[in-house]
Amino acid sequence: MAGRTGGSVDEAKTMAERSLAEKLMNPPVSALSRDGKTVRSYRAGVIKTSMSRPILRYTVTGFDRERGAPFRAVIIGKGYYRYDGAETFGFMNRLWSEGFAEPDRLTIPEPIAYLPEMRLLLQSQAEGKALYDYIDNPGEARGAVRLTARWLAKLHATGVTDAPVLPPDFEESKLRAYKEMLMQICPPHARRVEDFTEHIISSLKALDPRRVVPTHGDFQPKNVYVLRDRVTVIDFDRFALAHPARDLGHFVGQSMTMSCARAGSFEAIGPWNAAFLEEYARLAPPGALAAMPVFVARTFMEVLKHKIFLDPAKNARLLPAWLDECERWLGKAHDSPEAERGESRLSRRESEA
Image (cartoon, rainbow, N blue to C red; front, side, top):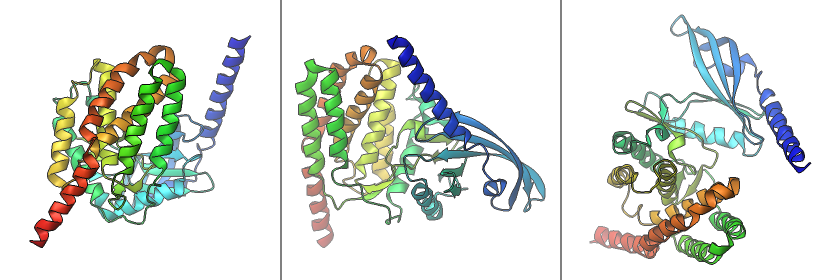
């Protein structure tokens, strides 16, 4: 009986998600037209169903008035039932005007329109392959990873200053939620999880709150697309002004956990992360890397929470080794806030001299 009930719940959820996606199948043709291109017809298909953000693909055909020729293109649509789609569209528009437009090699998808009545954001399709597709051969992907680091350094240097500042308690509330779930599912490791969480929180609180830049918020290999010497980054729902190490640590931590899930260890991804950090450090202001290790540990806690919550029987075994890796990164980070501020003071003294 319980199995049938569970199946009924899953089936109802699937049907509800499908229904939400199908509501987005018929945007007005005029919304899909842009830059002298008039869309005459399109075919819609669902890429991903979701209660919060379904994703669709619109294959459009029409006439390009500037070229005097027919055209065919793919437009991506994202439904916004949790995040603020209008806000995300606004951030993308500002980044587009701040140098992330094509034909630049470091780009974002072109923001086409936001339809508030449908809660639908329309954007161009990112070209190329996801950086994640290269994760099994990290040594061979160092060129693409260096381009990715250049994209991030460019973002952190942009003049988009009217985005919201990440609330001071945002990371703390997230980490405490991860902690409670992990302690509940894995009680033998509860004390260690609690200690690590408090260590991460105290390290984050010690960071200089004035050091904020435009950050992506979910900067990881599945959100980066590479085509030869061009990088396009997608998904700006968590865009905010925050410490630059937020993106650095998230990328490194996500790369490590994604690689470990496939290679069985954290060592294989080493050349990839080394190339990323080396290239970013070459372009970014001094001190940006100092706080990165604590954000790596924070990302490990987030990924552990998701993996163990989704499949505790399979993934709870990961906890000891992953906590060991957290401990290693926290060892690197134990004095990072002080080091960062000390470096800043040294830079000021040198400039005054």
